[in-house]
Image: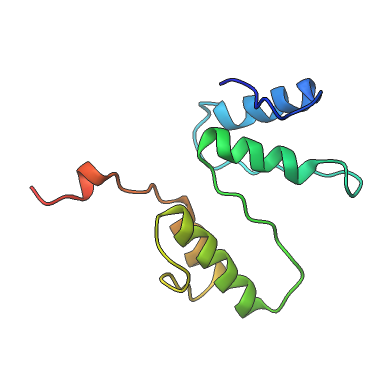
Length: 111
């Protein structure tokens, strides 16, 4: 995949992230990206999600129910739904739903 044109420098970081998302290793993988504030971590991740069709959601320190609904709205947007159209009872359900493949228009159509 071509590196985004608005990404200045960061060849090593982009390469590491690309290897992570394009790995054919089975199962769920979780990556942790850390560093000082305002150094471009979110910028990199948003570009990576755009390039690979991923979901970017930044966790915030907030009460559990609003956090769960904010995540549900992000998952809904990634599936072409509006805010409030998805609701989760807990984080287990939220993550299982987020990890479930989005049905294509062809497979969703009745035969």
